[in-house]
Image 1 (cartoon, rainbow, N blue to C red):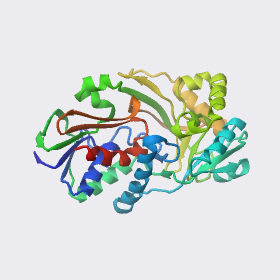
Image 2: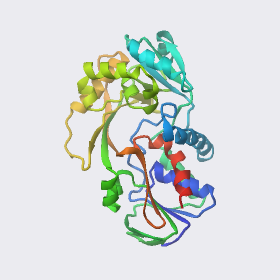
Image 3: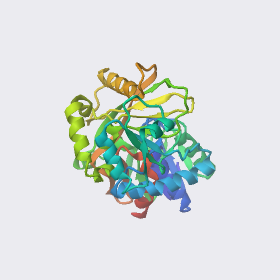
Image 4: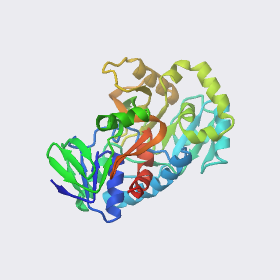
Length: 363
């Protein structure tokens, strides 16, 4: 099949980020993808660049990724909106966290009236915060547009091609062999298909999400991503706020069932006006194919209450899956010239463009 400076296995956003970075460095790049387009976590998400709420290495990656998203958008035809995020507080302790948060991140507090001016809300809002550095992308088209742009730059894509064997200097695929001194495996949770011992040692599991697309019950355009008090428990930077312990204790006491399913109550608007809502989090090495409707019922009822409407009309529902592990990133070298790269914290869209330069620097 040929040779290249870099072979990337996986054409989701993590694989594409490595292809973008390698091409930027003047390397020849081949991407191998088992499907005819990206169909995994890269398209089954909120399209939310949640940069502001990251911490540590993830925050460093997020800031780099923001620059790259805007740069790639300008040349690849992506619709990237520098829309920010609105975090809605429905309790005084949540508002206290957000006031503390403005001291550590680029964010401004909002009154209840200012929140209602920016996004539709229910009647129980006490205030909120605006995170201006966050962005929105169309999650269902971005990966495809990036791949098409990369192909125009000379990156070679082998779609509907399975990587059977990865060894130093070679990827044996269902269409033949590729030779490269640098190989990046970016298959997310499927790392255990290639290196099961590595996945076991690093505690890699599959995180399953329940998400839905619903009709927008209001007639308003909703540009920013919209987060709730439940989101404060999901993003690391909020843990820097001392009063988060009070929020966590209250939510765990009042909403134990929602904590049990890992609810991150938030939504974003699709280009057609509908809303992507969710999501829940459950963790397994192998996912059960049979799912209880309880998860969807929780997401629907809580989102309806969040929006202040009696019910929501469902257009689609799906399960997203991403790799999860105790550490937020998996970067490993199971063989000479081979790197495994995965975002194991559910923030691939937000940080992959920041991760890729560090991974390529290890070769």
